[in-house]
Length: 323
Ligand code: PHE
Image (cartoon, rainbow, N blue to C red; front, top):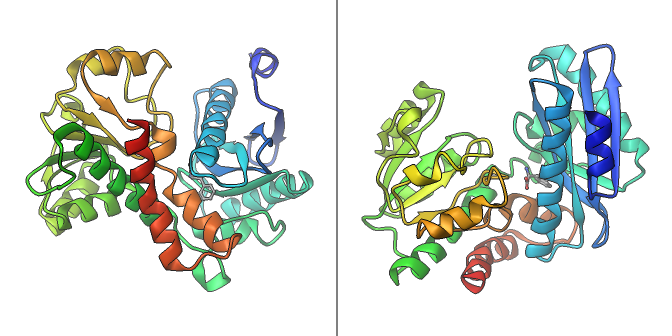
C-alpha cells in the first residue's frame, strides 16, 4: 500500500522514516519546490494505519503548493505527518520531536516546517534545537508564535469577501456563522465574528470546549452531529478535513462554506456538488493561508505587524477576484 501510494504520487519526493523507539511513522512529503523550498506544517496524529497517514501527508502537501502560490510566497509545498500510536507527552514527546528534527535537518533546507494539528510553538522550540528550518517558535525564543490567530484573521476577511459576493454586503451584523471546530483557529475566528456582530454558532466534538467559549463570547452551541444540517448563512469548517462529501453536501443549509480546515473536500468532485447545490465555496488553500503568510512574512521577509495584517486581509481580495 505504501509502495502504491509513493509510485502514484505526483509530488517530487517522499521521505519515510520509522522511529522504532516510539513506533511512529514519519512521512515528509515534498510536493513541489518549483517556487522555492517546500514549506508546510508538521501534523501529529494517530491514524488507522501508516498508509492513511501517508495519504494525508501527500494531500496536505499538495494543498501547500497551491497555498504558497495563491498568496505569492517564494515557497513550494510540503507537509510532514508524525503518525504516532498515541499523542505523546513530556519527555517522550520531546525526544520524538528531537529525532524528527534530525530528519528535517538531514533534508538540508529543502523542507521548512511549522505547526499544524496537534503541534504548537512549544514543539517548534524543541525542533529548533537541532534544525533551523522551523517557523512559529514561541515569541520568547524569537519566533512568530502561534499562527492560529493569523489564520483566523485571514478566514475572517475571507468570510467578509464571500458575504460580499453572495449578498452584496460584507457586513457580519446579523449574519449566522457556524464554526465547526473551536481549536487554535476556530476559537479566535469565533471571537472575531462575534465582535463584528455575527450570530455565532459553535460546534466541537469536545462539547465542553465549545460551551466554555460560547459562554465567554455569547455564542450558541450546536451538537457535533447537527453541525452540517443547521441553518446558517456561513458554514465554517475549522476542524479536520473531509467535511464536505457526497453525504454531507446535500444536508447543508447555508449559502457559503468558508473555513480554515485543510482539505475540506473529500474528493475533487465535491466542488461541483457544492456548486450544484448553489453554495459558494471559498477554496480552503486560499482562505486559510494567513498563518503561513504571517510566519514566513515576519520571520523571513522582514514584514512588520502592519504589513502582515494588510497581506492577511488581502486574502479577502484574492477570493473576490476568484469569485
Ligand atoms: N498549518 C499551517 C498550514 O496548513 C502550516 C504552516 C504554518 C506552515 C506556519 C508554515 C508556517 O498552512
